[in-house]
Image 1 (tube, rainbow, N blue to C red):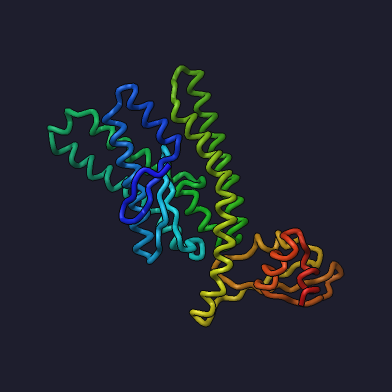
Image 2 (cartoon, rainbow, N blue to C red):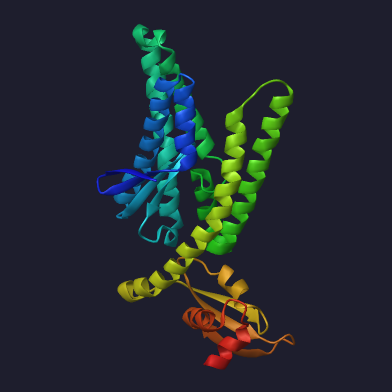
Length: 294
């Protein structure tokens, strides 16, 4: 749900975030509610500023209870290092705020009388640490995917990051259940586990859209720069194009050598020809169908 705009960027609230804010306010935690909202918003603005510092355009920001998603209009995944830098900006901002707040708390007696200020410190630490968990769509998950994408390719890196995210969600749920049976009720742990599982599953569709966009941009970048690293893959003639696509790396162009099961080289093709065949015949077509189109 769109709430307002900031510097030309639409700010949206996820319904779970609105529900959490309402529940906190209802139970008399108005000050904590305002602090949580302000920190989550500032966390995402730090991502926006980092993205703009790299020359990227931001479309909108959606706020979740434990962070948010700043949607980058440019194809961020083409450069894993830039994606890591943008993702890391949020947790670093929270840790910097927490450090400054601790210094202020230790040196200003007036602040030591207000419980809300301690909540401000704890909230920054929790937001920073939680967002560093290696789970999509959290910042730590994006950093993990960026590191894996260089060797596995973007699609495979995303799939592995999603599996790790589901594992993290299960661990949080198990911890919440364990604490529940020991009479420690942490509803936020239950909420966090369900949020991670749902959001990570949704990331698969978002990642595919980003991946297709990046493949389209790669040709444009090649013609602008005049050069691009070339990677060579070898595939059997009956290999589905889906498996080849998963191994494409973002910042490289690909040549695929096609061989038969007895080891004979049947021919070679380029990345754009694989993409064209996928658009015509679907991702379950084989490498042999790419050679037949030539």
